Length: 138
Image (tube, rainbow, N blue to C red):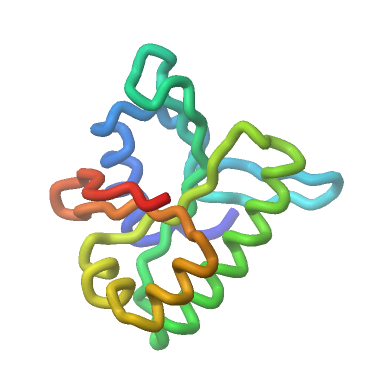
């Protein structure tokens, strides 16, 4: 299994605070003989606001030496997971979770906004210190 991202537990706690039930940590994506691990699987109870929705969340801190390289890797990983989930769990929506700081300092740049808009990347922005979801971007 892969190493947990440094903001993993904060993201998980933010999801719980937001009313999500963590069902998988990690979420196993198995397609035929290949097994991959996304960070978190979560479900919203039927009576809750996002009625029975199911998520897979990949947590990314963007702390590598190159944030552009981190983004390229995150987009590639997102695409692979999305394609596999479409086959094995089409009821689950895939999100990338990032910190509020990364969103404000890196994701707000024009070039990154262009890439994200073209890619239509669903993002969960999390206040890591407060362990709260700040924004859902679909």
